[in-house]
Image (cartoon, rainbow, N blue to C red; front, side):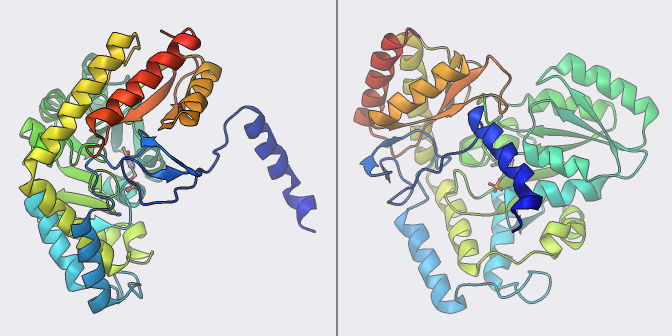
Length: 393
Ligand SMILES: *Cc1c(COP(=O)(O)O)cnc(C)c1O
């Protein structure tokens, strides 16, 4: 019996469960799409990152199937040893084109970029300057680095400047790290101000664009939105969100890319994802580039939903993107609202402590371009009905 030794984990799990901090796993019985079947019922999907509805796009399916015909299923090895195909090479060129940088690279996941690359960029005597609401993978990547870290208040440019002024004296090199779109609030980093402050104090910049690709900058992401493709030193992102596929990406100068894959332990010591994934990812970039109206429609739907949700009486916090939270406050109320939404056919996730500060519980809605006007209206109708019932609006 290992139970004697691992029993403490059971206790810990139980206490998490009592606090409502465990994850029930909801089973999708169809592809991820605007109206999937989840746990036996068709729902309006407001909980996925599949903003551009590409996860089940026929063109991505075809690209994947063709690649399986030629290259089979598994990569067979780490990319660094014997798992690197021409599909991967083509994807790397496509990333550079798409991002407007000299070179591009794919990683197994977005998490693997941050956890693998951040630890390799700085040394003792250097410092990361990091936004307080940055993603957990950035926090973990920085923890693995010998460099120090200073946290600045979320999107507070005064605090960023004060921090830069201080570390500028004390440390050698400095990298300012920020999410492009913050995933809990749906607000956008003030990247123009961040870049000019970084330039002023001789710091490098590292931007995590996972929720920005396919959404900002006509789909090309936050650096395109701000015209900073040539300025941001490290541009990372993910294929698993608006692109509908899987994997992480990095864009930057050739020497940055060369250094990145030769030193990131996640890249070097973990298998490459299946070659067909590279084919799907490349197709997704082509579609986003050639169908700007798809991105425009996403924004129209986001605008409609955000405006109507507010006119019902919900507070959408700092949302500026297709992430449109309904701010609730109390965790229990947020969970009850989310459960009742689900029972009525609306799948939207309650985000509670510890993912957000206590008293800032919310339902996170994420708009998908595949949602019809009728879907949005139905979701809003249910929000109004249940919100009244729970005295939220
Ligand atoms: C989703 C996300 C990641 C992780 O990307 P994956 O490709 O899913 O591993 C990293 N950073 C941010 C800000 C994210 O939203």
